[in-house]
Amino acid sequence: MASISFEPHLRFGQCVSGRYQVFSSVRYEKVFSLMKAYDLAEDRSVYLFTLPQALFRDFSEALAKIRLQAERLRRLSNPFLLNILHVGEEEGLFFCVEDRPRGACLARVFQDRRRRNKPFSDREALGVCWLLCRGLEAAGESTVHGFLNPLEIYLEPWPGGPIAFYPRIAHIGVRAMLRAVRKPFEGLPGEVACYASPEFEAYGPLGQQSDVYGVGAILYGMLTLRVPTGCFVRPGSVRPGLPEALDRTLLRALDEDPEERYAAPSGLAGALEEGWASGTVRQELKTAADRLSAGWRSEGVAVRVRNCPAGQGPLPERRERPAAGSAPASFVSDKVRAVCLVLLTLLNLGLVFLAALEIGSFWSSGLCDSKACSKWESRFTEIAGPRQSKHPTGKG
Image 1: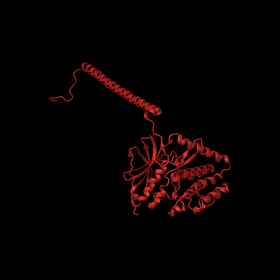
Image 2: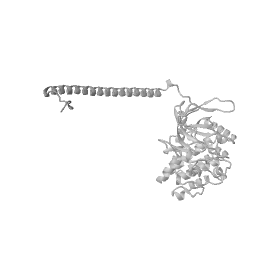
Image 3: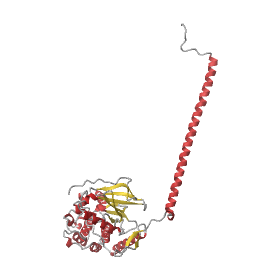
Image 4: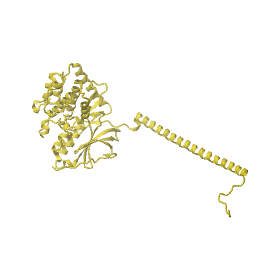
């Protein structure tokens, strides 16, 4: 297939679908771009990623599958996924709107930790990967991710949680669909491409075992700070003190043969629970994750079930934005901004008035000095007599 030149069509200030205003670029790859945007209708920041429709010119079925997959994922609302809020097409682009993460992507965190030689603690690594399994299980009802990598995982701050952060998975299934146009690694750093499973690289069939491999590769990187290049050593030999059971679990998840791995992320999650020294940590994480999921539904991203056509089942619908009169906090903040603007304007006018007074006093004082000088000059002339001409006329 001939190479398709794709320049980002979205510019600063451009408004997509009449409501998503583009701010800046997060990441640009040759096959898609990721932008920061603002949802003018919902009054919040979002992520906007786009794919050129020309990329699927000869593969219309692949684009149809991406649309169907995105619509299915849009029905989910899970704290461990960057949930899809809107799907559309505009100006030759297929775009999806996602939640905007608050934390950094795991690839950047890996770079920082390698520079400081500070691997993740056992509790952090096990907790993050256990939660990744939980997020993948939720997404697995619609699709498989196929290629879990640290560039598309974000670590959100978790104040009061059992660990300092929790993961959120982005762009679920997009890389798997890009295999149809033979561009799944286009624009990706080589280090990130190492997280792909053997069957993904070989364009083989993808299943939940591929996601198990992805979680295992992430866990291997968090424990050892090494890139999973396919030749794995026991994590316990790199990091003494790890339980042997965890070594066996990890090497099984990274087996080259998908049939030898755990059948699903839930199986890997159950094996990871044995890596905790005590059941207290395991129960603490489960309780916190359940509480996070419940809070996710009851707060800003709450969903309610609406009636759907027969045969489709209930679909979640996002809570509608309240009217302007029913948002006192927003009203108060607008009043405060207006008062501050008025005070600032009055202050500027006062400064201009004071400057005018200073200028007026300067000119008036200068005029008085000029009159006094003329008065003394005329008096001196009367005493000294008539002034001699500087250039006398007549004969010398």
